[in-house]
Length: 174
Ligand SMILES: CC(C)(COP(=O)(O)OP(=O)(O)OC[C@H]1O[C@@H](n2cnc3c(N)ncnc32)[C@H](O)[C@@H]1OP(=O)(O)O)[C@@H](O)C(=O)NCCC(=O)NCCS
Image 1 (tube, rainbow, N blue to C red):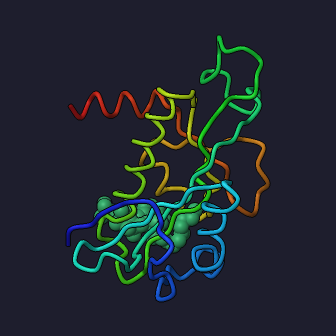
Image 2 (cartoon, rainbow, N blue to C red):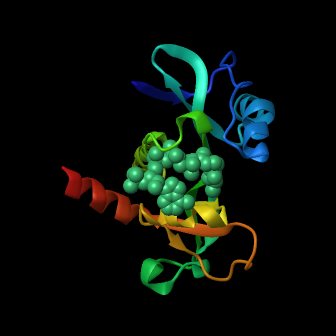
Protein backbone atom coordinates (compact mmCIF):
# COMPACT_ATOMS: atom_id res chain seq x y z
CA UNK A 1 0.00 0.00 0.00
CA UNK A 2 1.44 3.37 -1.00
CA UNK A 3 0.76 5.97 1.64
CA UNK A 4 0.79 9.73 1.32
CA UNK A 5 1.19 12.02 4.33
CA UNK A 6 -0.08 15.57 3.96
CA UNK A 7 -1.89 18.31 5.86
CA UNK A 8 -5.50 17.69 6.86
CA UNK A 9 -7.95 19.18 4.35
CA UNK A 10 -11.52 20.27 4.95
CA UNK A 11 -13.21 17.50 2.99
CA UNK A 12 -11.11 14.60 4.22
CA UNK A 13 -13.15 11.61 5.35
CA UNK A 14 -12.50 11.33 9.04
CA UNK A 15 -15.77 9.77 10.25
CA UNK A 16 -14.78 6.10 9.65
CA UNK A 17 -11.47 6.60 11.51
CA UNK A 18 -11.08 4.30 14.51
CA UNK A 19 -7.81 3.86 16.37
CA UNK A 20 -9.51 2.21 19.35
CA UNK A 21 -9.12 5.29 21.53
CA UNK A 22 -12.18 7.54 21.75
CA UNK A 23 -10.45 10.83 22.68
CA UNK A 24 -8.05 10.42 19.73
CA UNK A 25 -10.92 9.53 17.36
CA UNK A 26 -12.97 12.42 18.64
CA UNK A 27 -10.16 14.94 18.29
CA UNK A 28 -9.73 14.11 14.61
CA UNK A 29 -13.46 14.20 13.90
CA UNK A 30 -14.47 17.24 15.95
CA UNK A 31 -11.51 19.51 16.61
CA UNK A 32 -8.55 18.96 14.31
CA UNK A 33 -9.83 21.04 11.39
CA UNK A 34 -11.00 24.00 13.52
CA UNK A 35 -7.81 24.01 15.56
CA UNK A 36 -5.77 24.08 12.39
CA UNK A 37 -7.78 26.40 10.19
CA UNK A 38 -9.61 28.75 12.55
CA UNK A 39 -7.56 28.88 15.73
CA UNK A 40 -4.02 28.15 14.45
CA UNK A 41 -3.22 26.19 17.59
CA UNK A 42 -2.09 22.96 15.97
CA UNK A 43 -1.62 21.46 12.54
CA UNK A 44 -2.80 17.96 11.72
CA UNK A 45 -1.14 15.77 9.12
CA UNK A 46 -2.97 12.75 7.81
CA UNK A 47 -1.93 9.50 6.19
CA UNK A 48 -4.05 8.46 3.23
CA UNK A 49 -3.87 5.49 0.91
CA UNK A 50 -2.85 6.78 -2.54
CA UNK A 51 -5.78 4.82 -4.02
CA UNK A 52 -8.32 6.44 -1.69
CA UNK A 53 -6.95 9.91 -1.23
CA UNK A 54 -9.56 11.36 1.09
CA UNK A 55 -9.88 8.51 3.59
CA UNK A 56 -7.78 9.16 6.67
CA UNK A 57 -6.02 6.06 8.04
CA UNK A 58 -3.61 7.75 10.44
CA UNK A 59 -2.80 11.20 11.74
CA UNK A 60 -0.69 13.33 14.01
CA UNK A 61 -1.12 16.84 15.36
CA UNK A 62 1.78 19.11 16.21
CA UNK A 63 2.10 22.54 17.73
CA UNK A 64 4.88 24.75 19.00
CA UNK A 65 5.48 24.91 22.75
CA UNK A 66 8.18 25.65 25.26
CA UNK A 67 9.34 24.02 28.47
CA UNK A 68 11.74 25.42 31.13
CA UNK A 69 15.28 24.25 30.62
CA UNK A 70 15.41 22.82 34.12
CA UNK A 71 12.69 20.29 33.31
CA UNK A 72 15.26 18.36 31.24
CA UNK A 73 18.08 16.12 32.49
CA UNK A 74 21.26 18.21 32.84
CA UNK A 75 23.24 16.33 30.22
CA UNK A 76 20.78 17.37 27.53
CA UNK A 77 20.77 21.08 28.33
CA UNK A 78 24.18 21.88 29.77
CA UNK A 79 25.57 25.08 28.29
CA UNK A 80 22.13 26.38 27.34
CA UNK A 81 20.84 29.68 28.77
CA UNK A 82 18.15 29.48 31.49
CA UNK A 83 15.31 30.07 29.05
CA UNK A 84 12.21 28.18 28.19
CA UNK A 85 13.36 25.88 25.40
CA UNK A 86 11.43 26.08 22.12
CA UNK A 87 10.13 22.74 20.97
CA UNK A 88 7.55 20.84 18.95
CA UNK A 89 4.71 19.29 20.90
CA UNK A 90 3.56 16.04 19.33
CA UNK A 91 0.06 16.45 20.68
CA UNK A 92 -1.62 13.45 19.08
CA UNK A 93 -0.66 10.43 17.00
CA UNK A 94 -2.90 7.58 15.99
CA UNK A 95 -3.32 4.90 13.36
CA UNK A 96 -6.64 3.34 12.36
CA UNK A 97 -6.62 -0.10 13.94
CA UNK A 98 -7.38 -1.78 10.62
CA UNK A 99 -3.92 -0.61 9.55
CA UNK A 100 -1.93 -1.03 12.77
CA UNK A 101 1.36 -2.92 12.74
CA UNK A 102 2.01 -2.11 9.08
CA UNK A 103 4.57 0.63 9.63
CA UNK A 104 2.14 3.53 9.43
CA UNK A 105 3.07 4.76 12.92
CA UNK A 106 6.68 4.68 11.81
CA UNK A 107 5.89 6.65 8.64
CA UNK A 108 3.97 9.26 10.64
CA UNK A 109 6.61 9.78 13.30
CA UNK A 110 9.31 9.95 10.62
CA UNK A 111 7.36 12.83 9.09
CA UNK A 112 7.28 14.54 12.52
CA UNK A 113 11.07 14.25 12.62
CA UNK A 114 11.43 15.85 9.18
CA UNK A 115 9.18 18.75 10.16
CA UNK A 116 11.05 19.23 13.46
CA UNK A 117 14.36 19.46 11.60
CA UNK A 118 12.93 22.09 9.24
CA UNK A 119 11.55 24.08 12.17
CA UNK A 120 14.88 23.77 13.98
CA UNK A 121 16.62 25.25 10.93
CA UNK A 122 14.05 27.96 10.18
CA UNK A 123 12.81 29.00 13.62
CA UNK A 124 14.57 27.12 16.44
CA UNK A 125 13.48 23.91 18.09
CA UNK A 126 15.44 21.95 20.66
CA UNK A 127 13.38 18.79 20.89
CA UNK A 128 10.07 17.06 20.38
CA UNK A 129 7.94 16.32 23.42
CA UNK A 130 4.92 14.12 23.79
CA UNK A 131 2.68 12.89 26.58
CA UNK A 132 2.75 9.17 25.85
CA UNK A 133 0.15 6.70 27.01
CA UNK A 134 1.87 4.39 29.52
CA UNK A 135 1.45 1.38 27.29
CA UNK A 136 3.09 3.25 24.39
CA UNK A 137 6.22 4.39 26.23
CA UNK A 138 8.26 1.52 24.79
CA UNK A 139 7.08 2.35 21.29
CA UNK A 140 8.42 5.91 21.61
CA UNK A 141 11.61 4.68 23.32
CA UNK A 142 12.42 2.71 20.15
CA UNK A 143 12.97 6.10 18.48
CA UNK A 144 15.13 7.47 21.29
CA UNK A 145 12.44 9.32 23.24
CA UNK A 146 13.48 9.69 26.88
CA UNK A 147 11.05 9.90 29.82
CA UNK A 148 11.09 13.16 31.75
CA UNK A 149 11.22 12.70 35.48
CA UNK A 150 8.78 14.39 37.79
CA UNK A 151 5.67 13.22 35.95
CA UNK A 152 2.74 11.77 37.87
CA UNK A 153 2.87 7.99 38.34
CA UNK A 154 -0.41 7.44 36.57
CA UNK A 155 -1.60 9.17 33.44
CA UNK A 156 0.55 9.92 30.45
CA UNK A 157 4.34 9.89 30.59
CA UNK A 158 6.00 13.04 29.27
CA UNK A 159 8.86 12.09 26.93
CA UNK A 160 11.25 14.08 24.79
CA UNK A 161 13.53 13.50 21.84
CA UNK A 162 16.54 15.79 21.42
CA UNK A 163 16.85 17.31 17.96
CA UNK A 164 20.52 16.22 17.95
CA UNK A 165 19.43 12.59 18.29
CA UNK A 166 17.32 12.98 15.16
CA UNK A 167 20.16 14.66 13.26
CA UNK A 168 22.59 11.90 14.25
CA UNK A 169 20.15 9.16 13.30
CA UNK A 170 19.59 10.73 9.89
CA UNK A 171 23.33 11.17 9.34
CA UNK A 172 23.88 7.51 10.24
CA UNK A 173 21.18 6.49 7.78
CA UNK A 174 22.83 8.39 4.87
C1 LIG B 1 0.94 3.52 18.70
C2 LIG B 1 0.56 3.47 17.23
C3 LIG B 1 0.55 4.89 16.65
C4 LIG B 1 1.60 2.61 16.47
O1 LIG B 1 1.28 2.64 15.10
P1 LIG B 1 1.52 1.33 14.17
O2 LIG B 1 1.27 1.74 12.77
O3 LIG B 1 0.71 0.20 14.68
O4 LIG B 1 3.06 1.06 14.45
P2 LIG B 1 4.15 0.53 13.45
O5 LIG B 1 3.52 -0.47 12.51
O6 LIG B 1 4.89 1.66 12.81
O7 LIG B 1 5.13 -0.18 14.45
C5 LIG B 1 4.86 -1.45 14.87
C6 LIG B 1 6.03 -1.91 15.70
O8 LIG B 1 5.95 -1.30 16.99
C7 LIG B 1 5.84 -2.35 17.96
N1 LIG B 1 4.93 -1.88 19.00
C8 LIG B 1 3.61 -1.65 18.89
N2 LIG B 1 3.12 -1.22 20.09
C9 LIG B 1 4.18 -1.17 20.93
C10 LIG B 1 4.32 -0.84 22.29
N3 LIG B 1 3.30 -0.44 23.02
N4 LIG B 1 5.55 -0.90 22.83
C11 LIG B 1 6.61 -1.28 22.10
N5 LIG B 1 6.53 -1.63 20.81
C12 LIG B 1 5.33 -1.58 20.23
C13 LIG B 1 5.32 -3.56 17.23
O9 LIG B 1 5.70 -4.75 17.87
C14 LIG B 1 6.00 -3.41 15.88
O10 LIG B 1 7.34 -3.87 15.98
P3 LIG B 1 8.17 -4.40 14.69
O11 LIG B 1 8.31 -3.22 13.76
O12 LIG B 1 9.49 -4.79 15.27
O13 LIG B 1 7.37 -5.48 14.13
C15 LIG B 1 -0.84 2.79 17.02
O14 LIG B 1 -0.80 1.50 17.60
C16 LIG B 1 -2.02 3.54 17.57
O15 LIG B 1 -2.53 4.45 16.93
N6 LIG B 1 -2.52 3.16 18.75
C17 LIG B 1 -3.72 3.75 19.32
C18 LIG B 1 -3.54 5.20 19.65
C19 LIG B 1 -2.32 5.45 20.51
O16 LIG B 1 -2.04 4.74 21.47
N7 LIG B 1 -1.61 6.53 20.15
C20 LIG B 1 -0.40 6.94 20.87
C21 LIG B 1 -0.80 7.89 21.94
S1 LIG B 1 0.55 8.22 23.03
